[in-house]
Length: 279
Length: 289
View 1 (cartoon, rainbow over the protein chains, first blue to last red):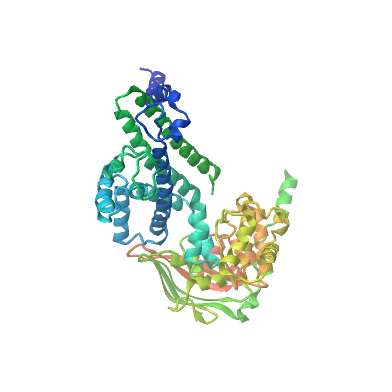
View 2 (cartoon, rainbow over the protein chains, first blue to last red; view 1 turned 120 degrees about the vertical axis):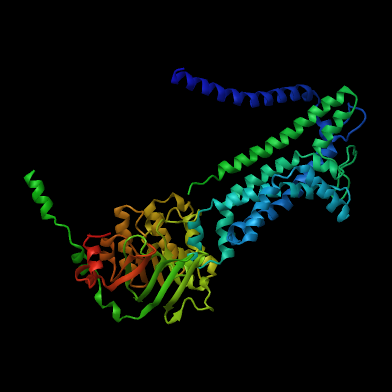
C-alpha cells in the first residue's frame, strides 16, 4: 500500500469517527424537534401539568430547575473558588495532608451521581431533617458539581503567571492583596466558564434528585423549602403517561431543556473568548 | 575595501576598562551603607546556592553583581527584599543589615521590607490592567495618602515614560512594547517611593535601544535612590555601576555540588582595570564565562 493511500485512508477513518457521534446528535435533534415543535407553546411554559395533554405544561418543573440553578451557583462558586484558592495559593504542597486533599477532590469528581443522591437522602433529607425540598436538591447538586468547579478554578488560578504575583509582592502587597487584587481578577474568566459548564451539567441531572424524592407530579409553583420537581424528571413523568400526546409534550420539554443548556454553554464560550488573554 | 577596513579600525571599541573609568564614581564607599551583608548563606532544599558573602551597598550609588550563570547573584539580590521567602524550600543564614537592622530578624515583616525596597524583574511583568492601574496598584495596596493622579504622573515622568503614554493611561499595559513595559515596571516601583531599587537583569529581554534608555534612567535615578543591579552583561556593569561585585561558581571536588561565592568586590574601575583576583581578571577579559 502506498504511503499516500495510507494517509487518505487514515484521514477517512478519522472523519468516520467524527461522523458517528455527530450523526447521532443530528438524529436526536431532528426527532425531538419533529415531535416536540407543535407542542412548544406558551402553555408548556406557563401551565402546570394536567391529565389533559392539551392544557398540560411544565411550569413548576421549569421554575424549580431555574431556582435550583440559581441556588447552586450561590453555593458552589464561593465554595469552589475558596477551595481552589486555598489549594493553589495557600496550601504547602509538600505536606501530606494537602496532597491527600488534592487526590480526594479528583476522586470525588468521578463519583457516580446516584451515590450523591444516597448521601443527600441520608444526611440532608433525614439527617439534617430538611425533608424532600428544593433546597436539599440544590445542595446535593452543589456537592455533585463542586469537584468540577474546584478543578476548573484551580486551572484558571494556576494559569495566572507567577511573575504577576512576584510583581505584586515586590510592591509590598500582602498575600491577601495579591490574591484578591491580582490573581482572582485574572482568573475570573476561567472560573466563570467552569462554573457555567458545571451548572449546565447539574441542570441535566436526574438520578440524585429522584433519590432524594423530587416528586413527579406537582401542580403548583415550587418554593425553596417546599416539594419540587425538575425538568428532566418532568420529562420522565410525561413519558410514563399512556396517552401518545404526552410523549410529544415530553419532546417539547426536551427542547426547553436543550435551549437552557445550549444558552448556558454559549454564554460560557462567549466569556472565554471575550476575556482570552495572552501573557 | 581599503576604506572600509580603515574606517572599521578607526572606530576602535572602547575597552571595558575605559568605559568603567569614564562612568564609575570611586568615592561612593565613603557614603552611608544602606545594606551590610555579613556571612550570608542561602540554600534551596539543601543545595547551597551562595555562601560566605560579605559586602556593603552604599547610598545613592549603583552596585552591580556580575558573574556566570549559577553564581547566586540573583539569589543574593532576592535576599535584600526577602523575595526568597516566597520559595518554601529557601533557607537564609547570616545577616542582611538594612540601615543597621537585620532584615531576617524574627520581628521583621517581609511585607514592610518590600514597601521600602522595590524590585524590577528580568522579564517585564506588567499587571493585566491599564497603565494607570499598574502604577496605582502599589500606592493603593499600601494606602498611601495624597493624590493618586499626581503620584502616577510623577512616577511616569521619573521613568521617562510619561510622554509616550500620557494619552492612553486607561489602555492595557500589555499593549506596550517590551522596553516600555520595563520602564512601566520601574515607574510602578517608583510610585511607592522606595529607598532602594533592586534590578534583576532588567535589560536582558530588551533590544539595545531600550537597554540604553534603562541605563540612562539608572544614572538619573541614583541621585535619589540606591540601586542594586544584577547583570550578565559586563559592558552594562561598566557603564552604570559605581561598585561591582564579581561572583563565581565553586565546584565541590567530592560531591560535584556547585555553590556561588563572592570573589571580589570593589570600585567598578578597579574591577575592570586592575582586579586583585585572577578569576575576576579572567572573567572581565573574556577568558572565562
